[in-house]
Length: 297
Image 1 (cartoon, rainbow, N blue to C red):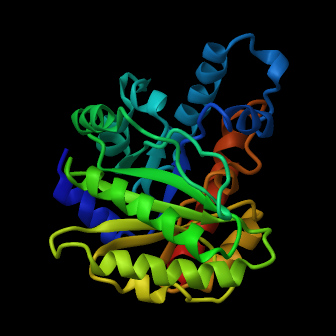
Image 2 (image 1 turned 90 degrees about the horizontal axis):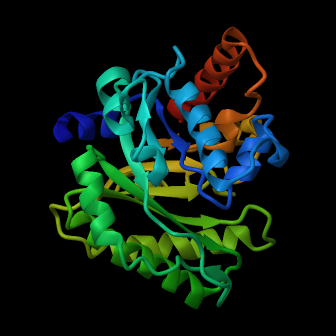
């Protein structure tokens, strides 16, 4: 798979990145929203079979193509499985023109200094080697900011960039995701601190390295414009973070150069009980709305 062609798609494509990377902790909720309750599966294996079926259904929908969905973030088990008889990452790129990414974090550590850092990832190098072999273009890793605490935010961003350098060493492009919780009272102040910290780390990157950033939609429109324009940034994408799709799209449209990377907002309204026609129509409407917001800024 051509990494140069994939990079061009991510850098200049007029679409958004689908987040199909719900992991063990978030899968039951994702399935409930999809109309599948816990009493409909008896084991974790059955649960992951059901969520993979949901993801495969999305990936094979007529609207899920590279002219609107330029990338998709996969859970590790999704990377290891097949869609329509092909390894998932290869199916996405070869059949749909969608650039594959992989979620690599293993969840969040306990809160400290107003943030939740990522848990240790001692097997990251082995996972990155597998990802490269599978045809993955880049990675995603999420940590959380729950307060405008300068020390906590600095530690959060430092951890993200430390792991980002490890990922770059494998020839993959890291999506750095220090999520600011949308419900905190000091969200705007936290975002100002986050912007300053990210800029410091970006300025320290070598000229031949680029990262992506996945950020909560800010309280101040275009707050992250300096990151959009930074030469070490391939693309800035936004998470929906608990906002409804309509609100997330409205906020996104106000931010120049930022595109969506939505999960729950993308799948809002989809149900296992829908016919294929109903499912495909609902997903197409969601994709069109998110793409329109992504290119509006």
